[in-house]
Image 1 (cartoon, rainbow, N blue to C red):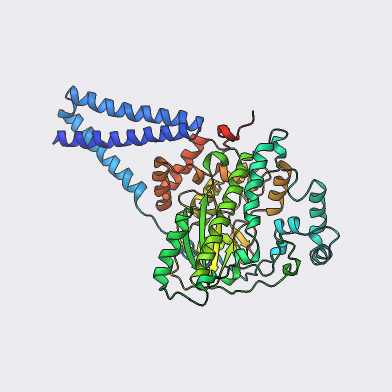
Image 2: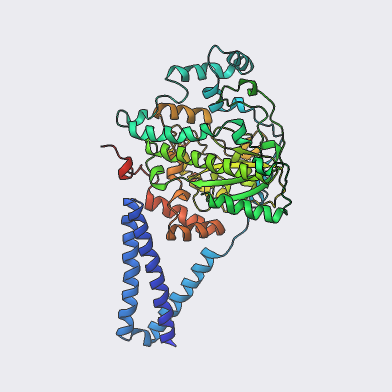
Length: 478
Ligand code: SF4
Ligand code: SF4
């Protein structure tokens, strides 16, 4: 009997030591020196336990009454701890309803012209649109004029790393150009290839969904989900103009499509780790380029099947994509206002295709984000412009959520000349998607006690205010 108990105890301790070692290796690979130090200590302790068990067995301690009792108590507490940390605890009913669960009042569709990027990037001083817009929204005029004075809508690109930043900004602009090149209306809203004209493919929603999801993942997306479009998340009026198509500015956006295929791409962990320095914008922009690349091809694929489709990417949005992604089951909205996914946290970018092709929809998910964010607050504590709320969710435009202050966030972007991404870098869900982090993500997405434990551990291993990491060699300043 004691042989069996000893074998089980040794096996469990060895599995823990192996996970500890994997975590140690992961921390070194992630260049997380503080976490590497603590994980090495943790591994030494686990290894010590394995060696102690072997030693005690050799000297015959487990054949004694006290030894047997110790083995039994150790195993019982191990099993109890596993059950406590692994069992699925109460679900968040609101999250399972997707964005509907957050609606508490009257929601008004957002006018894209009011979005801080659209105002500052699109409207030119002295133009007819300038006069019309600021007559309608005088409260923004002074603020936006001050931004323009500071060197344009986004300030001086790479200002935080000047004068060494040129190569990284050059890389950023190269990716940015891809999305712009794909923003002609005939490209984001393609017609069927001449070969397929007038030949609508009759396809079941199940088969269409399977093919579309497979095609999207094959093009490089990390996750893909489908939802019926809640018209509340469509912009009411067009506000972003990139190709001098001024007749579109202020035009009503109509709900022409029923479904949205929403997908994520993963931002490179090592580039986001440098936030708010220039390498992080390379990650953002190359992901926008990838999103545009995938969405454009997916829209063309749907058009070639004989259905209408519109690619939504950095240079053409009909809708706000975070709520569509939540409804499509890709994750939940976090304190920082971004989509939080199970595998990459907020370290993703979104793009989508809307269509009238009938598809099978996915269900929203509860991965424990709301519960985790309520305690964590790391993004809010680290945000250099205090743009992320520390308080609980409040009612914003008829929905209960955390509301990022886009105006102050945007001003900080202008100051550093990058898209900052500090909140994304410090988020405990953003760690690299390695084996030990996958285990932790699985635990925190299903169990409340695990959320408490790993929120606390994240502070110990990574610090309450983690600092940025060095860029990968190729993106480093010489
Ligand atoms: S991007 Fe930077 S400034 Fe904006 S909310 Fe995140 S941490 Fe704050
Ligand atoms: S840093 Fe913490 S509070 Fe902020 S989004 Fe991530 S988990 Fe939520």
